[in-house]
Amino acid sequence: MRKIIALVFILILPLIFGCGGSGGSGVTGTSAPAAYSIAGQVTLNGAGLGQVTLAVNGVGNQFSDGNGNFSFTQLSNGSYTVTPSRAGYTFTPASVTVSINNNGAAADFTAVPIPTYSISGTVSSGNNAGLAGATVTITDASSQQVASLVTDGAGHYAAAGLTAGSYHVAVSHPDGFSFSPSATQTVTLSGASQTADFTAAAAATYAISGSVSVSGGGALAGVSLVLADQAGASYRTTTGANGAFSFAGIPDGYYTMTPALSGYNFVPNPLLVHVNGQDNTGNAISASSANSGSGAITVTL
Image 1 (cartoon, one colour):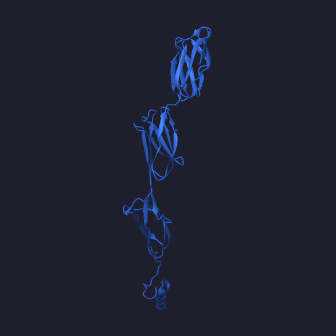
Image 2 (cartoon, one colour):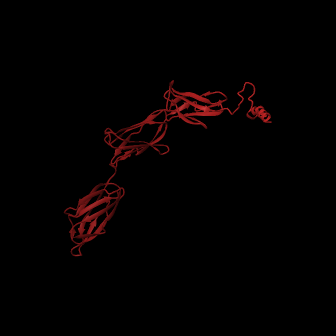
Image 3 (tube, helix red, strand yellow):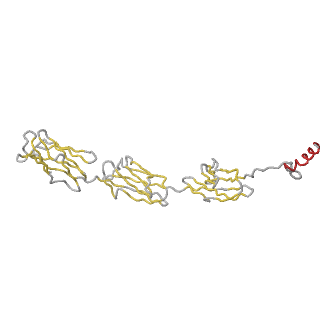
């Protein structure tokens, strides 16, 4: 009986694990799917171009090597799109779609440099001498800053590597110059570099003047006057023998004037002064003697 069971087991064993057919090994399994590749080259003027990003949908990215070559491997059958990119270049074709059907595929590209141009010019003073130390800021059409330059000793500046488009060129100077034709020019780059020149002129300034006098007692000499703007810059002067004073070269703006002289109180203190396109006059302030509590002092601007 045991011999019969053993014989039956030997007979059905191939059926359990599979016979494999004629010429087979007697054991079957799941084979690994075939793997293929997409390979190619990126060239510039006939030579390989490296550091180009190649993107394949659903697979990933890689860079071309120093000879411009690339290869995506271990790909299964299907359709793939290869797209190259690198700053400063366009590519022909812009992308390639290939189909893998039990074979590899090729995708080659030609790089074309994007043309670049420059914006340059001179910032000059009123006597046509170059103005050093002016800041020139260039922004593109989306208001993104693309260059910030300081003019050299001859007033020159230059910004290179700009692509075609519209740009705003603005100039400023720490000494407060105004500029013509204006402080900002619009420059369009299209096929050639362009220039933008500026001429500086000192900003318009005005005078603040007046006198300090004791009410009913005549002029008051030796009063110290401090004029300060909102940025903290200050100007100083002192009344003369006739009580007169003057601040010259004052640009438009809001100021505080603080008078001081030992033995006197000034009210209000400080005096608020506004310069707006003309000399400032017609303001007055009164003060009293700190010693006697009497004797009004009037400051007339």
